[in-house]
Amino acid sequence: MRRTFFAGLIAVMATILIAGEASAVTSMSCATNRHTANICKQRDCDRNLADNLAACRELPLNKACEEMAQSQKRRCDQFCDEQYPKEVDGEADCADK
Image (cartoon, rainbow, N blue to C red; front, side, top):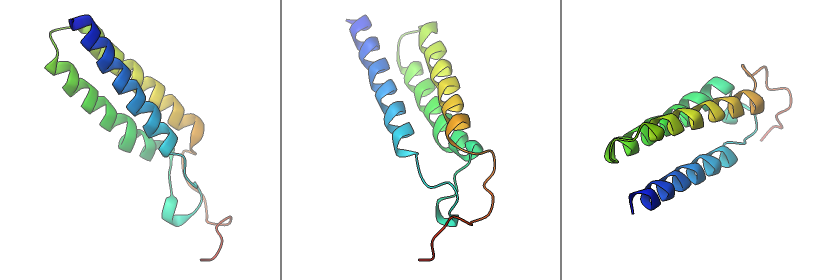
């Protein structure tokens, strides 16, 4: 029963992480949608890590849960580094609205 619950929790956390990554893809150069790797990490990855660690504290002591949360954080950080620039340059590509 506990293994099934733990497996289900991990599946839910992974789904939330994937959905968060998919919704994080925005225009990178416009002032209204400035998104950098650091913002992505702070807004998405750090928040997800905190939520996952809180969920781990609710479960019976299991070192694998915290290791999984840290692993997801590393994957999220890597995603942010690959998808977003370190800094946003000017707004040259933005259309006047």
